[in-house]
Length: 349
Image (cartoon, rainbow, N blue to C red; front, side, top):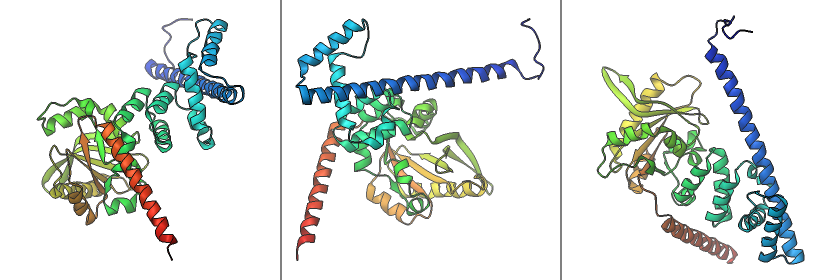
């Protein structure tokens, strides 16, 4: 057997090499997922045993410490069974035991991601939100922590995205796919940055920007040319959304939203639909990203818009999560008060 034997098919060696490499990577990913599934299942069972023993036999902190030491004596050098981690397994079991519909999802996340969700969340709906988002968006453990630090749940509840009527009618699911605010602190932009700095920063950090806006966004190009009549125009950033099956035009503004910004975006959408989009694709969507916006001005501007568009903010600094948590607490309190008042009014003769 010789190493220099030519390939009969005429296909470059690199093509065959790449095929083998992809098979290896795919097998590794499946193996890692299988290992993770077994590990989460093990932790779940241990949490269940601890829950039962505490209830039936009065196990306490001292017993759990002894259990940890016993495991170490039987399996020297084994990691992940410290007293603290055993208590986390108990918390994991107690948190999710009444959510049978989520059992399959639980086994798709690594234990480190579960720990972030268990430790940093306060409400059942918040935990479920991050669990589903992490799996849907294929977040890494680092990204799970980042999104929680960015108070994504609080922002989604308190500030739903501002959509035009046309966008709501064409894509009812758009409210769950877009956000009112996008956090781009990873750009590390200096004070007084220009629109060009913002644009170039997003291109340099495209992978992180895609993670922020959503995994179904596929990048097509920057400053994509559009020719209308005898004039040339350019869309700042053009994407394709797999779930919505349409082009997404993103326009960047470093100042506050102005109503005239929307007119320019709608012009671009018309040009895209006439000259760029393919027959099987839906109408293009426009996303105007501004440094700030007045919600009432946005509402007025979008209310008469016939184009599927939305206006959102970008933030170059992390939000104050504690402040947002306080606002969310107030929001829930007011919601409960409203429900109570409605019940009282309904009971009145």
